[in-house]
Length: 279
Image (cartoon, rainbow, N blue to C red):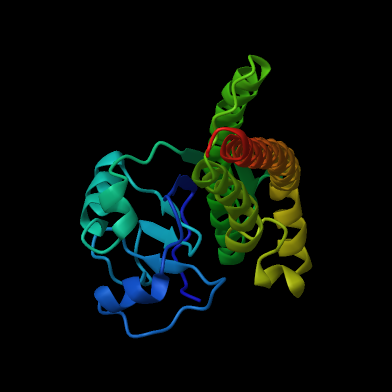
């Protein structure tokens, strides 16, 4: 782990990309000769796009679930960094704007006891593992925010469909129902598998201070309740989708039954016609 110089103030600004970020592919494109594990972030100098080194005053952490966390970076540095990444990261080509943003601050003050709030932490001494826990937490928080908005968008869409159903209108092709179900399942998969909301950083397993710090931050950012809310909304959406699917299948079955009845009636009419008037 690099030994960064201790500053008095650290500013964290996190963004969420639309989708997973392949760190090993990015490393190859940047000429970085190493492999990243699934849960391991990439630490770079946002100006040179090289692995961060002692003496750097600005950093960026990149996470496989699409989180970007800038540390002590000006708006100009962040803008130029994101623009530079566009040639290496497909999501940035498709997503020129990054609307989901989370900010946090860390202050080092040896004269005070540690205090942690939902927008700022004050610690008596600098510890690299605590800085990385802040990065990990705010990255997960902003990624969850993106999923939350998408879930709410689908809920609004589903509300329109329910209103149409209340008016006796049910025109939902199977392709649209399959798309909705896929979108909803993706919410659940992304939040638990990609973002690992329920998982703790590896350092917390053998470092009690880091574990307490992470639990405090995750509680302040309400990571678990927010995940549970996404899970609950996703399950509700799946239930509604199942209802629409059942109604759609019932409608098709009814149409098939009427077609069969009409065919039988037509056969009876043709038989009677041949019997009485066909000769």
